Amino acid sequence: MFKTIYAVGVLANYIIGVGMFSLPYIASKVGIWTMLGYFLLLGVFVILINLFYGELALRAPDQKRLPGLAKFYLGSAGEKIAAISTIFSFYGAILAYLIIGGEFLQNLLSPIFGGGNLVYTLLYFSLGAILIFYGRKFIFQVEFLGLILFFVILIFIFWRGFPLLKIENLFIKTGNIGDFFLPFGPVLFSLWGLEIIPEIEEFLGKGKSLLRKIIFFGSAIPLFIYLFFIFMVLGISGFQTTESAISGLKSFLGSGVISLAFILGILTTFTSFNCLGLNLKSVFYYDLKINKNLAWAITCFFPLFLFLVGIKSFILVISLAGGTMLAISGILVLLMYRKITKNKFIYPLILIFFIGVVYEFVYFLK
Image 1 (cartoon, helix red, strand yellow):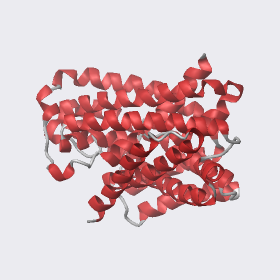
Image 2 (spheres, rainbow, N blue to C red; image 1 turned 45 degrees about the vertical axis):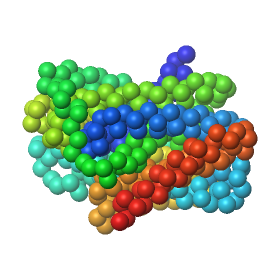
Image 3 (spheres, rainbow, N blue to C red; image 1 turned 180 degrees about the horizontal axis):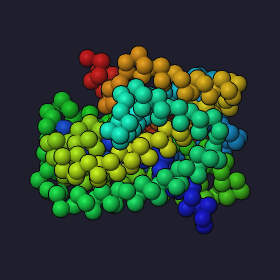
Image 4 (cartoon, rainbow, N blue to C red; image 1 turned 90 degrees about the vertical axis):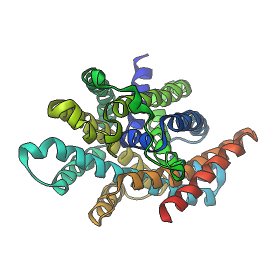
């Protein structure tokens, strides 16, 4: 029983990441009802895809990530597409964690120690790179403990902010009709978690029959936490809601509570940053047969390079990573699942993801 709860906690905490902090701002742009519609639609889709991916992983040889599974089910062409979408979605996600994690760390520590954003981003990166180097077991322990602490801090912030909640703030809308598709990338990014499923499968050992149940509950828990977080932040900060959510709360909750909120942000982003890095390293090592130390170096230092050359727009990064690369990965999972089920209901799901990919390119590259 404990192993099952532990695995659910690891999956849930992996999913609960940097995307969460974009959601109140996105909701303020498109309206709460549009945002709820996206969560209902994409929430169901992502849970289904995670379940499909778990089934594919159970039927294939062990230690395969998405490129390896794509080769097993779709051949070499599928493997190449999967490798590209996986690598660039991981790089986009890791870059997003560097952007927002460094910002949170700076906001927390610079009033005490001084220093600019680059210093704290490099500190955040260095600690994460060390954990990624030492592998899965230690990171799993951090993930589970991190989920417990996450709940404690989130409940405390809600308790302090509850008297300031205004229902009318939930119904603000600052965007226009052209922003209707804006939530697609960030919501998909925030709910995505299939990369950790092979790690959980290996962790379960002989208890792999529990994988489906773990995937369902581990995928559903973040959905409700995100809706709660949107309700809390948007209800308090209203029109002052910022892209990273927490900084907009400062004038309402005071510096003491906000410091705790920044700790929540660091904790949430840092644990998922480590798991993402670990999984990308595994893709390079297991699927692409790259030397383990080189795989670690490529995993960690390329996103840092992108940050250093000036790619620092949080919403842009998660929208492109979620709306393009993750959507392509989702299409591949659906095509692989079609191979083992022959079920035609897969095609409407593929169409939705395809439309999302086209939109993200048009919206952000226009």
